[in-house]
Length: 162
Image (cartoon, rainbow, N blue to C red; front, side, top):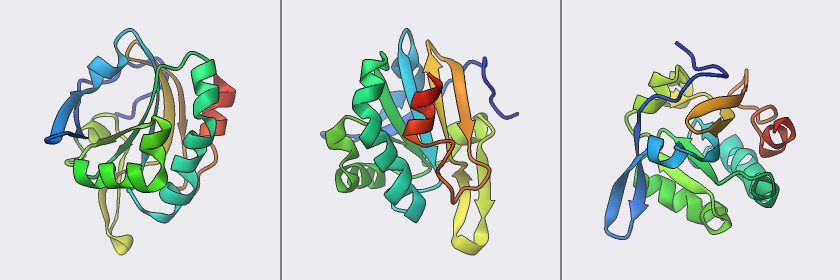
């Protein structure tokens, strides 16, 4: 089942890089009683994700802050090491965007946002989407029809919807 507006996010444990290596992050801890923008990408360092999607949220970070968004989270089906390096490389980490890995695609599959594209080596990856979550409930959801595009899921589009 694909998640829709009004649904509660499922319980999920994602990974981030901590001082001593990968650390588990309960997504429910990040969303409980908070307003959070979450965007997901097919893969770290992939062209559209790297040059369009992450930069759109870096550009709009202050505007999300001004609208009362407590945190912006980027999720990708990658490990914590890759997400840490990607956050540093793009400037997302310095901008205050939280980079979380879903290495086994568990969260991605639980919300029905998984896809596979063997010709380009993307197996059990995430569709490109962005959502606003308030206290664990999806309030706004923008899903791209084409994983190579970043229009409806861009930071500016989500910002305009809230």
